[in-house]
Length: 359
Image (tube, rainbow, N blue to C red; front, side, top):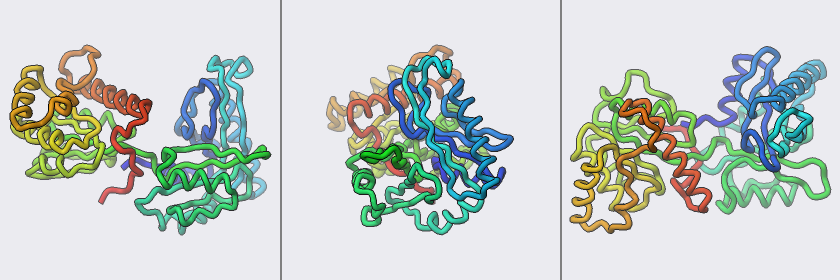
């Protein structure tokens, strides 16, 4: 399960009690990180990054100043919006500008959020807040619940929930106002990634993709084929018929096939290609393996256009031979590149879905 900002915030508050979340809510031109990137700043600790350098140094100073002032005043839902030009003044050469939202959170704010969090379901779940201090963090689960009082904000939230806009963080400026709103999903949008095989390469891939925008379903025949300690990021699936799981997989999912058996690999790939609803299909193996599999697929009646979408061998060429860790890095780079290219082409590379907790 991909952790959302509320999950991370909860963990940070349990450890530190009070902190500031610094988030990039808007940017113009070149910037060190994307909208939604954030970090936590406490009196004596830092977690995450908004891009490093002078921008981050200045943000940390401002965050600690705001935190100290808020603790003294007892203000609830304390916020500040800071805009930074990324030029000579900060000693950075990005050339753009960013807006940083500084939000103070203590256990008092989080106590107010707890009843709301119990209503989170698998529908698009959004948090939004004003840039002004003193107003809480609002939450919306369904289109029918959109009643913020701002027509502009209501329209944007409705478009996100309705699938017209991407389900990702965004800043909503209010006409004729210096303020605005920031919207972000409860959890990041992810692509379903089915990884078939718990061998050496599979284990390295599972380790490398953690933290990337994928919802990992890790599949093999027996529990013993998985490492004793498995990442919380992965949903472990034990099945004797992975080809059936592949056929029933989510629309637009990514598939990486690398079991211990060539016939099983063939059956899985055949299911994926036959259903033809996948975003990416990668098969570990040689050119010879690819040729043999393609011959079988043609004989079964799968079209050339669909067959050509299967990638084998997988991974981009970064050198390093057949070391499992290097293969994993090359595969991770390949699927990230495929994901980004699909988004640029306005396609749905793996039908971005709101990640919900695994059963």
